[in-house]
Length: 135
Picture (cartoon, rainbow, N blue to C red):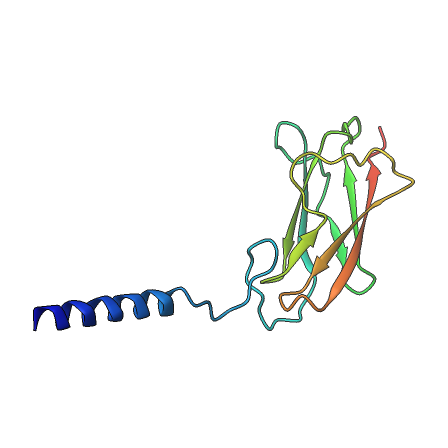
């Protein structure tokens, strides 16, 4: 009788362990949850210097229709050593990933970052245009 309960306990534990590991929601290659959201836009943009203080003179102008970000930075800002920060709509992600400082010094060739929707079906490229404050 004890042996029967022991076997029953083991079978129950194994089946529950397998059931508990089942994932209901798909995840992408970055380990992020893929949802049903199709929204895809940037809601805020910040540019920080090497001391992690803002280098912008005023708020960035984000146009979600033409997908541009215009930002003015202080005169003398070292644009080879800045850290962009994007705020995105819920469940969206950014590519290329920002893992550290970014070189924005070539003002004639603005950087392009793409926002990918939560369902991973909509991709919108945003171009970041930087101007330097006049001295």
